[in-house]
Image (tube, rainbow, N blue to C red):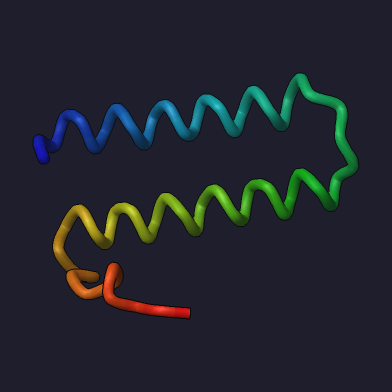
Length: 61
């Protein structure tokens, strides 16, 4: 995956989080949970893109 695509995805996620935090009225705790979930998903996606979590798809719950 090209580096430019990764940077664009990170910027889009950042702008979306900023918009949610600035303009959507929600309780502070819900915003914190939403921010944490989005950041965790982004980090897992980045680890998969860079090949550090090759076997993540093999995990069964």
